[in-house]
Amino acid sequence: MANESTRNMLNAGITVSIGGVDVTFKPLPINDDMEWRKTIGAMLASVVRQQRINVEDVNSDLLLYFFTDGLDELIASVFMLADRQLSDVAAKATRAEIGTAIGEVFRAYYLPFVSSIIGIWAAMKPGG
Image (cartoon, rainbow, N blue to C red; front, side):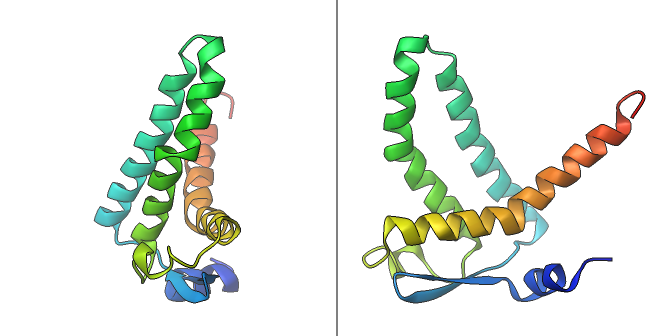
């Protein structure tokens, strides 16, 4: 059975102050969650593809991606879970506030999913 903080998070979501605005992030219904994971997966796949470029180009390409389109995609994906639009906070929010929100959202919603998949994989492998 889920612990109390997990139950609260699943029912009420997590609320983070971003740019002086309280934003609540809640789990999505399965269909929307699948779309959210596809968005995250596409972003991570892009990073993996860029790592296949020769070593001299990787650092500059990855830095450019993460400081431009990649960061924008990550922020937009997090706001797929939010009760407010990104435009409600974008003019006032700092990079530190967005970074904190991204970290909290991923800890709450993405990491438990990944942990479950790893647990299933570990249970299924021979000798596991």
